[in-house]
Image (cartoon, rainbow, N blue to C red):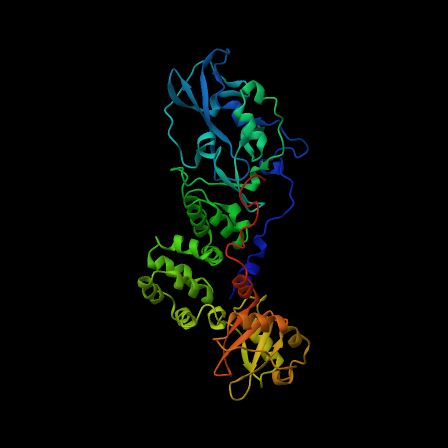
Length: 453
């Protein structure tokens, strides 16, 4: 199975494009959809006064605390404040008002406790502001220049992230001047996934459900664009939720990042990932491992997978044998169209790749191929040898990449069989592997993957 197969299989994970950033999805917290509440900027609250119920100043606001991990917009659970040079935690239940002018208590008596993080809690200023986040809808990394808050159904929540210049400028200016910078468009929190691996109480406890909306190639792009720590967090989050998707992402990573993320993993864990990958992609990864690790990792693979991978490792990676997949459907010419369709139904090859059934003659040599669409139109009892319209081009395993590309271009092929000894079919090369080999290193890095929206 090649990367096209895995991409197609994950097509349902593709994000909806063209969505305008802003306040959407208020139904996630049962708020009226017809009118969005006023927006409060985090930078206006942090550093503002803390006042008692009578308006007397008690101290200042250092940070706001929110709890992640649930659905909808994360609620503010508390406030980090400084009173008399002492940093303390103030529960949100004791707060009457949060405004740009400061935070006001609902009781005259001040009850402060030492701050200890509870599970799934993060500090907005310390942990998220000026940090990179994932814009899931755009499949890119962005920087949080401002965090937007709103009072929704009686509780203060994080509703979005401003990644543009307005948020950064507002924070640079003195508060009276910054207050005059209007709120622009910003990313709805539903479109954002924060990195929280640096937060001890959140690491590996908060799932990344929004990542599951992305295609494996998009997740791989994010891993490559992120720092080592952030990339590890993405891989860990994906693997905790979906081991199959983790293998898909590893297939899409470039050689450097594959080595980087596998070098610290034990052999058993590496083999577990490789066992879920297509044999040709697993062989590529094995080839990138240190030589002393290859045999131990191979020995841990399931027998059938190990045999295929070992066979592929015997070919030059720059030739047809090194690019081919050993998975294909090959039937004797005496089989009927009905037999071939049944073989297609029971095959584990991805439907997008299984558009041709190969036919062998009485001597075992490759005789030709029949498109699956032709099988659907044919009489169910008609033999495959009678459905072959013309000789199928094929190449030996040592065919050069240039010859491989020329043959596929000349015959307008999406796949081409590879044969040994002039007759026995051993694999098939698909167009996605050819394109990937042709394009320059780093071709998947899109302009704008890093930076502002």
